[in-house]
Length: 256
Ligand code: URA
Image (cartoon, rainbow, N blue to C red; front, side):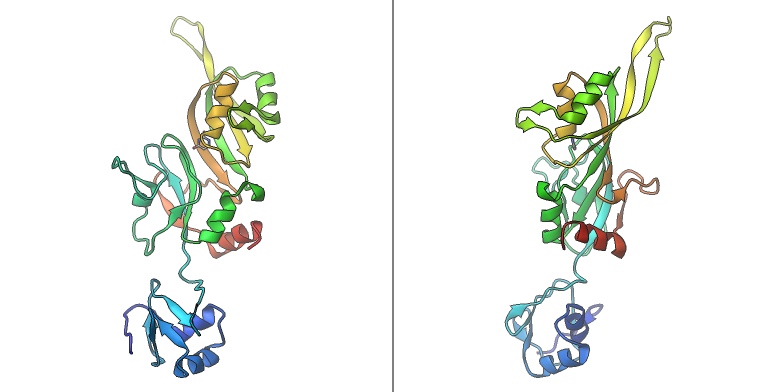
């Protein structure tokens, strides 16, 4: 069988990159009939394969590294964190154009929350990043109807009792308070901006933490996910591939 696919990679190169063997040895494996592509034995050395092709050596699938994709999206409000929505609302996957494979969001941000979201087809990394035992830190900028007193900050830091149990200690910092007055000069409750870092990932956790102590979150944005921080270059709705360094570091942070 001879696959001749434009734009693909040479089979022996893919085998070498996957760590199966040196390129020279991979060529020998191909000639010896030990390599199949999509279930068919390939004997031609120039054969090109695409990302979606399934390659086996001695009937065992190889793990290709070049077909793993990683993106960082700055999710906007009004987009759901899911691969599809039965109600037809825009999804985070819809925002990713020109992505050659199906990628999935790592964890979720609420419809009305903006900010950083990783999308990947690296299932093992996604699983570990979401697992609480790895304690990946997530930092949120929180706009709250204030004033937020010292005691409230302390409660948030120590843990808040929610329906699903007490939250783990959080890092909470006050960024600014915007004090307002009406035209007549009367004081209006200020809108305060706080930064909260948690390493759990419960449903609507930050909003519920504030609600539980009597505050309303009016705006929420994730500005940090592990080593990834919000950069002004990523406007709402925009995304970029993670750099090799970022992928390496993310993977090593979760023991990969
Ligand atoms: N906490 C929330 O309340 N909402 C999010 O989207 C993420 C964390």
